[in-house]
Image: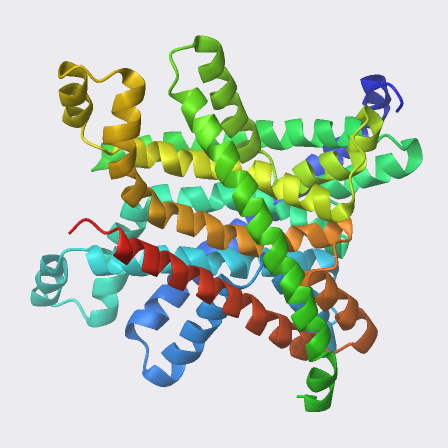
Length: 219
Length: 215
């Protein structure tokens, strides 16, 4: 048992700061993918012909029933086997993005169904096509109504992005591991990393509250 | 699809699945104990206990579970806590899921109508009696679903302990992907077992829910 000494941390501030930066980049990129594919999956499951909808439904089922870590291994090594030589960072973004796209799609699907049918009838009777009705009336309302739920997914995404350190992406956890390999001080560095995630989490939660408030005002 | 590979590795995966099940059950038990203590602390009259409960939930839900495991397993020896990987996994997962379950329990307790408490108190039940005889029996039904959701998340989250070298499903999958370069087959085998476990958990939750459903 050695005493704790947090003065070992400041010399590694630059490395940790880079780690924070990459965690933010990773989270934002994966969030964008999870949002766009969440909409696509939800629409496919609801409106596409069975031949397209069933595989997507199967994919969603598979990704909801298995751990993210396992999915990251599949995407990282699987894409390589299929001949796509992609860097770990891209694999991590795709993996995180698809995992949370599935959860967003599940929320959005319920959100789209919950939009009042009068909205569709109104738009259709004004002469909007089926696609236009979805694009301009139904989906925007569904997104607005599901912002709190999708925001929760985003909070989970930020924390789960720590998993991609396992496939070797140099984000916050990985930065800490680098510092630990030189200092042999895991406790100090992991506590520091936990504190940094906690702060990122607070910032994200404050941002989401603001977004929710703005959405509430625009109603 | 390499069928002979799947046949060859399957027994090892079944063995690993048992470790996943074991670790999940033990962490679930620990998590439930933690959750009841923390939700009791959050609803207590003592400011200190309430602050502790709030801080616990906020810290464990505000940081990644992976980091919590790392602090416990890799950082533990520095403060005199030396744990085997399996024990560290159970404790780490249990402390983490406990924070989430505490919120499920608190949510269920708070959704029992206030009139129930007021009525019980006004006919002379003490605070503790009101909780034990009136509120908790009604809240118990309401917490089955949310706790079930936590349990499913726990099974999937147990994959994290592969990073502290507990030989469970995901660890085994990672090792075989590395040695065979057949990620799709290996993922398939592990996925089938995970989904089987998740399915069984969901069925148990369904049964409990139906058994205790409000008629």
